[in-house]
Image (cartoon, rainbow, N blue to C red):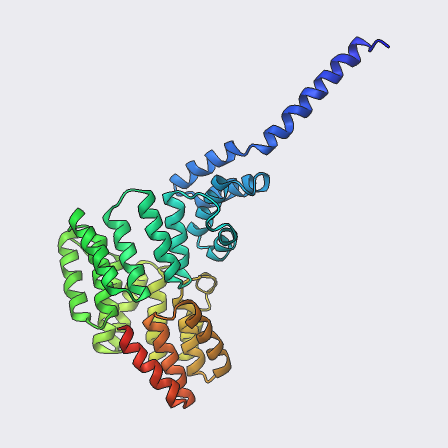
Length: 332
């Protein structure tokens, strides 16, 4: 039977449409390229939209997942990024940018073993530079590997001894191991190199002053000055809340960290402060739950150990309090 010519052409057109449409839908290359361009321009919200669309088409593509995870981590949506990544760990290729973003996410949730692993991976995949080595040093220090941190800083020094991140990391470690005077000395050197103070060096001076002077009105006033320059600078908000907590105003401190953008943060400093406030307000059950979660993820973080020590001291459990006291000085 002869097929009418008009129907024959319609069938060919339909066949062509059917053959090309699925291919276009199954190829998210345009969205991936657009997302990569937006990531490079630091337009993370728009980049995330592109990678979400690409993920709906090709959920197993390494390139799609890498971009998706990078965008999520840059927006501090670390829980979602890690939930997406962990089932595929070791089964997908990542680039330097994605590995670095994953490292930052693990650091924010307090898992410094994974943060070190992924930071080392990003350095292996990309160029070795003082910034990446300084970040690696900080993660190693948080993990309790002080010698490894020093080795990374020494390597950074060989590349550029005047790079600001090296000073910042050295000052952070000095303050963290209980030598605030050395920290301030390093920050003075940094300001001389820069020619001015910046937000990070001012904040670290505040940390050092707190260790030297305790919770004095002068330190609180200095903290307010730091916050005035950037009201959404989370470390300064947390430190100010900690000072107010030490001054005895638990309600004000809790209200500071109830701000939605603080509460949603996955930084480990937020649950640490929540746990301490729960102890202060004698909410011991909640405090113990928070401390146990912190110990699982950050067993060698001195601030976590100090919080556990404080909890068990207040509970009157002298045996456990003594164990955490000894562990605190071992970690230091």
